[in-house]
Image (cartoon, rainbow over all chains, first blue to last red; front, side, top):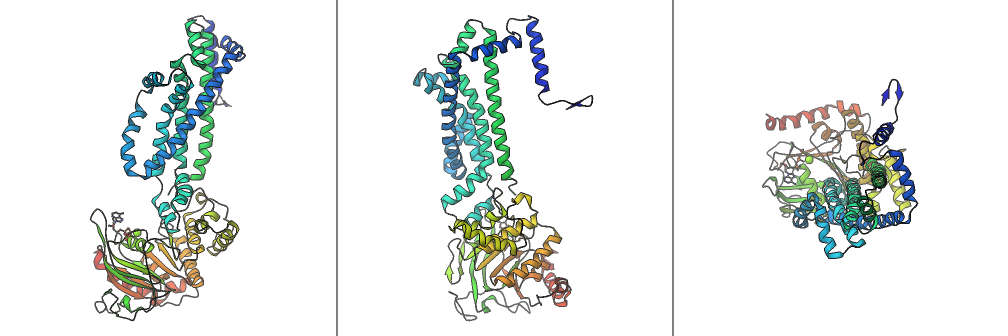
Length: 251
Length: 282
Ligand SMILES: Nc1ncnc2c1ncn2[C@@H]1O[C@H](COP(=O)(O)OP(=O)(O)OP(=O)(O)O)[C@@H](O)[C@H]1O
Ligand SMILES: [Mg+2]
């Protein structure tokens, strides 16, 4: 972006909004919005506490476990749905229902079955992430160029060779898009899971902060969570672009 | 093994209709066919009758073109010979053995190249050998030889998207030659490249055909292209396709390409085929 002949870096708007936040906070318009500077100070303070790192640990663990399950189950299921019409007809309606359903409403059900521990949070992550992973792996598999499939057959590929050397790599751009979107949903899942369970991790911290009306703490936590989501998205986006480059056009 | 059937033997179903056209040569007369097409019919699921009782013999070591109007079933016939599509009736023999699926004695060049976009030129060209479990150094040595033969030396480590359409098809050709199949099938290999590239490619193809001594089955809907590259042309009629006529081409293939294209025989044959096809178009 150019203003008055000067190049303005892309992140400049963040600075503008930070200043606006600071001004609004200092103007004491509402108790809900403390100044940014005070929030950052509080963030540094919280970052020194044990309960914060415990929450980070729980979040990282449940996020990793839930995402791993969603990917390791979702990708093969999606590929199979893309190649086996019968399976597709059986599963697709459910995938479509779950992908648009208000999943938060199901968390209490999981909680009722699995209790208030980390298992519930992991399952919440899976529940949020897996559907888009399945759907994109399926779409990727269906978009494999028919002539590549024929090429594999003509040159004598076994089923396993065709799967590992052609199908997976052909569908890789869509699979990675699905994983990226799945992981973003997993971020939502891990937060919502903790908030609803509310006796472990960030859920507990939020519970404490909000019941004591500690707005600076709340905002500090939100900055952490938003930052985390943004970081994951950027990382995945970068990987995806590299793969897209290799996958190129599909003719 | 090569089956040789005497001309007009009982085993050969009637094919082209000799006598209906003055210079029509019955396919069954070819003594040493490496590929035998016997009474092949194909009706697709939707009820489209693509081929109706086609019988043909493809002579060994020659380049035979299938020429016919768009949608007449050329690709279908080629894919049936390749073992990619099952015929509704009839059978294919390659080197005397009945075709039930793809086999190592046949390779295929695809109209849309069918290259793996994530693999380099070298890996693409060596892919047939990779699938057969040939050791890396060995298969890459073979692939490099054919990459050079098709005129792509220096591009081994490029990716398909870095190449022009014509160059991509050369990779497809290198892959088909690298597996050392006896029969190389090509489905309109030049249709996706521009005219200039196409001519260069046709000239290079002639050189490769002479070098490789393989049997080439070539599909095209360009009369000029068929006459320029083929030893023999099989003219197919409109759907459901039958063999309309078989034309032997005997042009002096060595020497200046432009001289071939101006050769009276070349021009006459093109005109002759065009006259024969004309009433289908009008
Ligand atoms: N998988 C399929 N299912 C149904 N019909 C098909 C299928 N493949 C081809 N056809 C039909 O069969 C006929 C012959 O098709 P084919 O592709 O063999 O023709 P072609 O001679 O190669 O044509 P072109 O010159 O356009 O490549 C066409 O009418 C086509 O629509
Ligand atoms: Mg075709």
